[in-house]
Amino acid sequence: MNISDINVPGNYPYGGVTDLWSVDFIAVSDKCSQCGVCAEGCPVGAIDSENSNLIDEEKCITCCACIKNCPQNARTMKTGLVKDAAMRLNKLYKERKEPVFFF
Ligand code: SF4
Ligand code: SF4
Image (cartoon, rainbow, N blue to C red):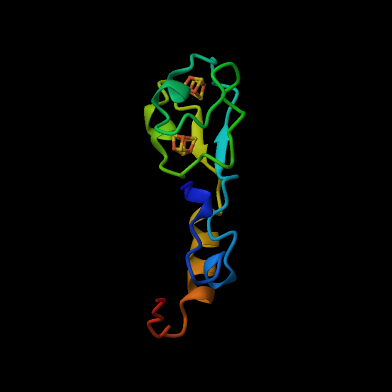
């Protein structure tokens, strides 16, 4: 049996949420030397090794390791990310959600 053959009850995307986190949150400045450190340290291989500006949106898990590892401090979070996340969380989880069971 293939994993794609398994049908799990429920809805997807869960709660209709498709964009809780935006992958477009990393800014790369002109201090970048294209050294490749960020690409090497990305746990999911989301950064192009030839061009650190290219990030695979399907792979990125927003762990921020690339920002932490950059020796040039060329990678930063775009301003507004935390505020945007807070607004989304406030909208989505303002009211209590009751548990839902699937059998
Ligand atoms: S680690 Fe920093 S300097 Fe090196 S390629 Fe990535 S963003 Fe550029
Ligand atoms: S935030 Fe994490 S997963 Fe996304 S590109 Fe940077 S190191 Fe990779």
